[in-house]
Each structure stands twice: as structure tokens, then as C-alpha cells.
Image (tube, rainbow, N blue to C red; front, top):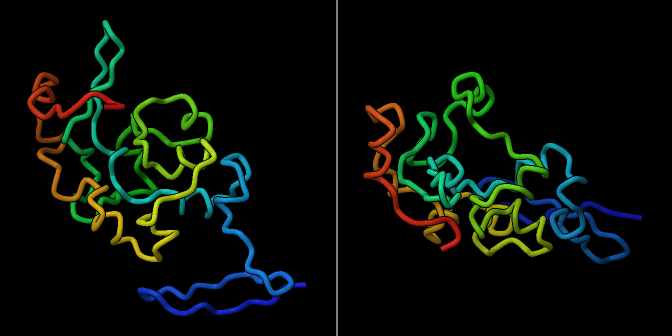
Length: 172
């Protein structure tokens, strides 16, 4: 038996929780694997940091990944959201659609990434919108790329221009 309870309004969103025998259920990210998520749950795991939308460089000799502060042409640097999420692959053919398999194989996802955390059996951080109830905490916590974008890929004249915007090796 379950009942629906309204836990209040927070930043314009009404939060509903399911109560089983008087006890709130665990949030989906604590009970499901990435492979078990429905589309809405999958999409909500994105914390909106925008770090996936920054270009990375790979050293062909060492295979080390270097982050840059160069953003995809579709990234809104203020909101850290894609400006055309639905049609992004049409406009940016090399845009990576994250899947559970990709999450498990790429080494450039941030250690704070919700997809990575859930796949590793960890909990989400306090600033994640699913935990905090607002998309602003990822920015307030300094996790997002807001204020860090120094160029957009469409502004660069050559591949060598990316080197001027390199910041660090992935994982360091």
C-alpha cells in the first residue's frame, strides 16, 4: 500500500514522494543501476555542470586526456545547458550521447558526474539538483563551467588554437 504526500514546493517544483507503510521510498538513484533507468530518470541524472560540453584533447602518444575551456558551439555558458539539446547531434555530429556503456568506458567524465557516481555505486553530492531541488546549486558549489568558458569551438581558426585553452590532464 502506498500514499502520495506533498513534501512542499522548492524553487517552483513540487516534490512528491511515495510512502510505503509509513516509510519514504529510496530515490531511484539509490535503488537502480544505469541500465534500469527510464529516460526521465536518465536525463535527470545530469547535474548540468556543462563539463561534458568542453572540448578535450588526447595526446596520441600517451593517450592522456587534457581538458580545455573551449565550449561546444551549442553550450549556453550562463546556464551550462545545451541550447538545442533535442537536435544537438544534427548540428554537432561528434556530440557524444551518453549511454551506460559509454559512461563505463570513457575516462573524461568528471569524478562528480552523476552517471559515473551511480555506476560506481556512490551517492549524488549535496549540490546535485536531484538532491538540492534546484539547478543553481551546481553553480553555487563551483562545479559547473559557468564563468570558465574562454572560447567556443566556432571561434577557433585552427586545431592548434585549442592548446591556448588547455587546463589540466583528466583525473588530476
